Length: 607
Image 1 (cartoon, rainbow, N blue to C red):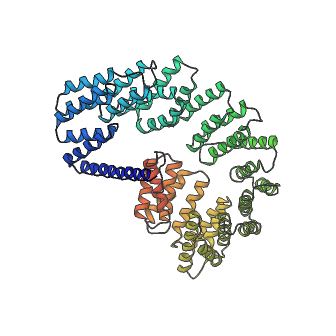
Image 2 (cartoon, helix red, strand yellow):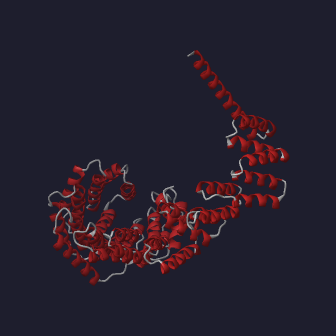
Image 3 (cartoon, helix red, strand yellow):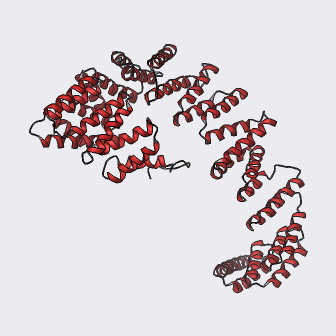
């Protein structure tokens, strides 16, 4: 027992001493004291000749000291003992290279490759040795010979693809990466990440060409069709991507999941026609029991609505056709909690585009009574219904609905939204003091949009009530704003003419122009809206609407007038010249998006 304990303690002590020597040797090596390092690594290697680490560090220390003869003598002696250890041949080659004996070194490297056994691990190990030396040509030769020895042409495709990537040989990189994905499906996502990172411009055309070539000879390989769809998605060519995913869906008799996913991508990219084609394909080709059938119907309707409501060209016939599609959907699936979102959207279409407020109101009243309807959707419907009643001039119905939502969702954004609308209703009817008190509370809202709007209206009321002994100009202006909200545009114009006639030099002139601009936007008269905003920017730079007009004009050019470069300049002007504006942060974000700062995956426009 005593002997065992003593032996254990002795072994433990030796292990600690060995570890301390190793640590000291590395310290000497890292600080450039190679003679001391060589002495200690030699000692360590002699005690543990199985350790390739101590051997390698010993040789590296000798090379750093330029003691080539000792290094060569040690390596050659070990090669005699271990002729199968190909890394020793590489080490000998390194020693010769250090002495500028390039041709002799090359012979040793080539000898290592010739002596390769048909063993994958040994081949990879030798290939990695050459990679660490940055000798990619020899690494390629290693893997090519290894593939022949193992009688498998694609076994080292990933290694070769990575080597050609390092050599900036894009065609070969693509060729071998495609082979790698074909041989090992588990590598597909990793290879895609590498391609995303390293391909640029015409490189994508090269990848596309190689995929087409492979499909010519192997049309049944779904991988190539999948990759072709992926390439089109990277190029934002959703139309051709849809063609590929539809082909896969039909060939594999799938449930439409790929097509549905592609439709969602197209919607995010505002490629609405492609998205509609994707969703309609599912509706036409899948059974009603399909998991994506109902959702595809919903998304198709929603996308068609977005195409209209986001400023694309449309006719009255387009609106009537869309309305009938909504009605057909609801006839097929019924009006209930499952289709409540569709009812909500149809009400919006009726109210804002088909000018049928009574029907919009009836739809939302019906929705609110659906058994089991989502409480948040029900609350949003009450807020929207309140808006519709206000548009009809029934303000008591509006304030009742807003108050119901405010009470039920007091600490929620929905509640704050309802409170803001109630405060704005008071503003519309001239109860400015109560409205301002509510706006002051809402300035602390967790919603930036509500907080900013509340702050703007609070300051606006304070400025305009403080300027005059009479509140008449502000009352007229607020009444005109309500008329615009109610789509009574000619009546609003009449109020503005009265205001200008009675108070020609009033400071509300820029506010009137701004509200006119918003009115023109509502009527999709974007050039007229832009003219209003431009006049404010040019003539009322020091007024409180200047930053709002600048932001609205930039948004117009980006979203509807097709001049993204001008939009970028206007956003930049806003956050530089109006840095204290509540819109400055959003303007900076929109500017950086237009500049292309967030195209890489994971980009954060908020930074």
